[in-house]
Image (cartoon, rainbow, N blue to C red; front, side, top):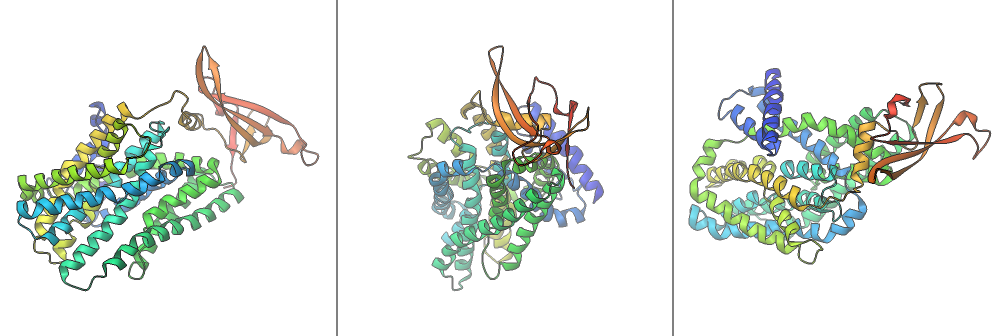
Length: 485
């Protein structure tokens, strides 16, 4: 299995580099590498690796959803709430309807089989969409109207909604007693319990991190471990109650960001570095699951069904955005961002075949074909349109986050030591300011620090101000951050 990991790292990074050189999303190259080295083409991956690929893909997805949670601000969610709620259901419903209308005559399957197929095809892929939205958010693109946050929130709930519909249609095919209203009620229950499941440990982690000043890597590993436990809890309680644990994973980051932006950004910075390896695992292993021979069986008729479903989905996405303050071009971006398929299709595409559905092999072929068609095209479309459509203000607040990471700055509450005289100070205040450099606005962080040993009582002691910017010298030239653990 070690050589399989080496293949993923070397070929995945090479493909990422080559595709970025061609101004294409690197993840497309990783998907292609996965298809080529997978068991259905060159078969370079060890069988043991393929057995545990599901666990690796889940951990990688958890990493990116944690990053998403640490970017979700309450004020932005309040602005996009209504549109996100509509986008979490209406586009999927439209796509299922479109597939049900055209699949029976084109693929010669029953309407209930077409509904099962539509539910599989109707889920947007968080594995493709979330990393691209995070990249836009990191660079402040679309921040003014919260467009990346809108797509993040909607796509996360979209999967929960579609999987519940899939279970309803599959149960109806089996002829068993399926209480449709009971199943539909599982959607809000699953979402609500998932969020609560994340908020509680997230709040406890916030208390832990404020009481003990741990090093950022240890905080990040603790958050990751708790997030993995949440997904395990979902599996344990699944027979009794539905829980959307991936929403809980995002909720961990959300509550820590709400309570302490300083701690949240420190953890987010480390997750950003961890994501480099997680991204390789996720996309190469998703590609390795794709059986292109099965996809070929779907043929031209299958391609047409997928395209019709996407056309219906696009109409549903556009209608969901009516009444918002988005321009027509920004709505077009949202429509394209809702195209990619990958994660859900790879996860449940083979379930109908295992359940004895007559057209199970054809449904699996369609699921694979949808990944091959939409993941690369959707990712390329998102990158192309996002760079041209999403706003980017000159004074974007996201420039401060890049500055903090670049200079390795401390946060309020942390202690720093002067390298020259050895004195220890505590950061008690910070401000984001814009400095004027030859008529150019330059982002800078201004700190007020306090010498604890000089204090004679409450409100006393020596304080001073420090200002750092990209053109003002590095923080580590004169200072270092101190940690308890």
